[in-house]
Length: 308
Ligand code: SF4
Ligand code: SF4
Image (cartoon, rainbow, N blue to C red; front, top):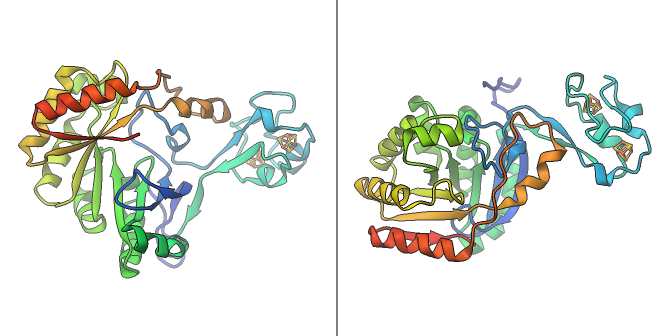
């Protein structure tokens, strides 16, 4: 997808959420910006509202008081009363008027257009927390590199204010964007979801060739490249994959990996939105299993940091 320049020549991006006081998205206390749109389709996706790059309306049936204000507000005839799904997405243009009219908070517009200068000004409000904690801003998603010009401009503005930036990436981006990433990010958090090419395709919709190539190139050009593995029960937590992953990152001169246990809370969001896929739901990862995984990595010579 591409973003269009605004009248001031600044690229815009669609942002689904700005989350303050994040503790796992880089050093210190961070404000995490979730960009909308992702080139992968992981079957365990925990943020399905970021899959589509377009703004979308979500509907939470249990919050609806049946007042009918949404139907009156909608100019497109996209509200279906008495229906648990409520929105006819073939008619909806995501204007957000229904959400503004809804007194119960049942309707929410997910995804708003932001300019980099407005975003930098908003994020700079947290600068005291960043200074005290050694934190900063993290761009996550979705995939931040779907908005390369926006990312570069926003990072420049943040750097000018003395704010550091972490970029979290799935690694599936065109090699021509590598320079932008290297220039823009102080820290790069890079997901390695599965080391087997075909298994990666099965689990995410894409094989891992480009992802591993990009990782290798970044490892030789960026000092703060941090691999991460989202640990999905029964999918990528087997010994073979862990060994392969460990030997790959060691071969690039990297000795630590962050392990993110699967969190099933994302499944609550599924009925609220018009997802373009229905991610599968797994059981929460057991703490013992994560410790086992940590030992496995350690045996291979890699220090694994397990997130809670
Ligand atoms: S977002 Fe706009 S078009 Fe879509 S249902 Fe709400 S009011 Fe109608
Ligand atoms: S405006 Fe909100 S609370 Fe009222 S009927 Fe529509 S969704 Fe329900």
